[in-house]
Image 1 (cartoon, rainbow over the protein chains, first blue to last red):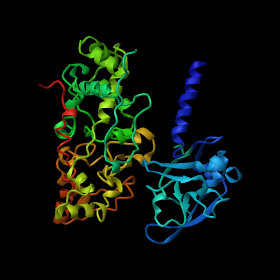
Image 2: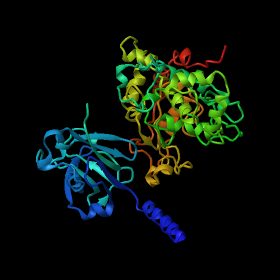
Image 3: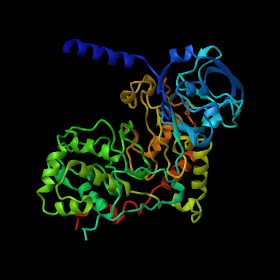
Image 4: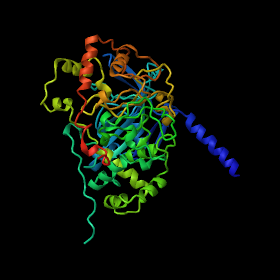
Length: 160
Length: 321
């Protein structure tokens, strides 16, 4: 029996490694998530437009960050009030880059701007170095928060 | 009345470094802990052959590097990566070239115990120090107990290393508005932050960002770098962006020490970038710098040498008469 368990364990580890890049959602969530490309493909897809460093608008398709936060049980919509307005989302990327958003910046009750986790642009996967998952923030003058290779979204309380 | 505990130590640094410092709750900096850490940093009894200390590969006069491409351990085997310089570690969150150690306490364990570095189990080191009459009282003063344990060694070393703050270079005086750069230095600063794009990763007073990038050294990196930690192919050949503080003293350069001089480093970014799938998207090919631009960049990099840091008695060998 132990031998079978070991075989199963080794097999499971192999599966995890073979799954490839993912986005982990953690922190002030009721349901921690690890989303792979296939999970994002099943969610509601949206396309937004953003001006890249080349100065031109480009369409990006993916999933609204608000939807991902709602799926993870983060305080969104009507729950985004009182102390919950002191929450922020930390975005972590494969190269160590990090940026933050306040939750209100990502919530449809507060803003019409839709920030997405994009996994394709003009029907194609994102290029190496930027994909597979890129944060796309429409309407910002600098693309510094449109981060490449997102690996984690962490929701926290600002504590001072 | 009980015995007074160790005295809290507050690190002093310029406001422009910011306060995103890393001191774990279970290892606050204390005067006595730092004093012990300094002794341990220079203590050869921590190595299996009693000949190496941390300071063997991290020499103060070379901004805590050793001038070698790869350093040799107690068994004579060379390391597979270049010994890193030590400066402003109080702000660093992930250590080693691949960022695999979260915090200095965790980092310190590797060189102490790795058979190809100092090669001695922490328990053996603790027992050796226990038998040296000078140590038990110093451990008691730092940690309230003269029964020496391995984790105390790590904690004291980490405390000492957090005090290695380099903030008195000509560049600091420039940031403080009390030094006027030469024409070449000023041009170098402009190039660094402008056309060179160096500031994207090395910008700001600390001259590094906590990032991992492939800086175009090889078409296929022999060393997997960050990939070994994450298992992701897009991390192949990605290494930590290191500080440029005291960079003129810390040759050779890169994770494998392939460049003997700063001139070679500048030539690399100017003329020899090798593209690959995982090369940083922030490197857009060769910079094609002119000879004057290369000289200017070098002038700026030399501004980062902190002569008081490499002679500061607080960081020096306490056993040296």
